[in-house]
Length: 373
Figure 1 (cartoon, rainbow, N blue to C red):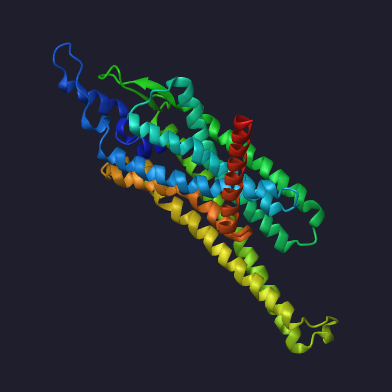
Figure 2 (cartoon, rainbow, N blue to C red):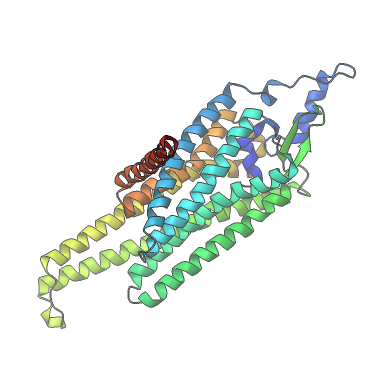
């Protein structure tokens, strides 16, 4: 994500949490002549790393199943001109970047406890890791704004699809621009005491702590606070508009509607309005609460570290790991939240599985047929 993210995913050599260089230099006390010191426990594979690998692997399975199912289903139905389906498909793409790039990266990093892929891979993979998280947040903003314009300005249908595509393009551009600094600040650095130990870190990339804090604060604002503000504003206005229209319709029905030149709404119309209102309210609460639930603990820890680094460094490592895993789990939750909103997720999952199985069985029959002939 940002430079401070190393606190939670690569704490074994993390200058953001306790000062990378100071940690490395502390190992100089174990020198014995010209012999190279033995790696301390925090730089070796341990039980904490094993637990993290198991958790990340579980998140990978859940996120892969959910996002691939959503993406395949929406891609097969791409002929349907639905803006919300288009945006959910882009959300699935963003979450698949997190699933198939970021999570395996975390697993490999924990398994090796050091960076073995070289400087170029360090810059590219750290860019992609941030890009997936940025894009996921930006697409959530697009979904919120699309619903905002659809409900508050329902007559502007002609501009809706063009506006939706422009918002998605802007989301991709903003995500790419915000992720590019990752390729600049992250680099491979050698441990000053353990010559065979390398890490992908940001140490030495910032002139002072002020620049580092400013960069981290920018990342937190773009990835969390700005999307959260936009989402809350959009859905608050949506709920207020639905409430206002529902109240007006009830008053029209009570008064007969005819005195104001309107026809009274039928009971079925009122029930449809109430169902739409309750469904939107339900989805609003789920969308906002899932985003807040997954990201807030990690963001609080990040802000704590930025403004009170000394006390933040005393937080247990497993707590730091857990907070970042919660943020990553947002990409696991999105397909189920939006899948339930746009489609029958369980039905579509088994349909995708059956299609894969049918293709495999057909391929096997063809192979058997060719071999027997």
